[in-house]
Image (tube, rainbow, N blue to C red):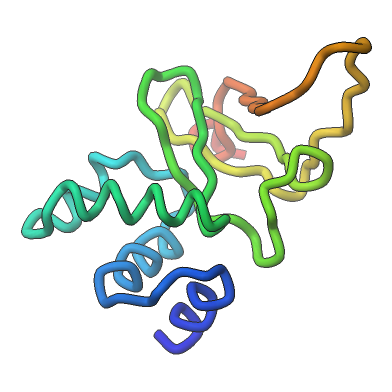
Length: 138
């Protein structure tokens, strides 16, 4: 738990017991997690507290939000040193149409895209869809 406390502090997040538990929960998952998954895991916790924790984590660069096209926002931990900057921290996401999991493919970075003059990028999200390695059996 000391590593979690340090990581949160480094990102400017006060390491409360609930925040540390949510961070630990996210760190144990291989796939991105929806708010409802966290609510189910922490059924006795206040929903507002869970939502605010995720929003704080997102604002401070602890997690990033993923829109995988399912209509449900998902969250995954950022890599250490990530600032969620459009120029250098963007990576691919993969949504499996069989098991419905969305995973970060952090080793596959999205290259910089030069937009026409006058266009300003505010957000980018690249989600590939198909069958994941677990479901394809490879």
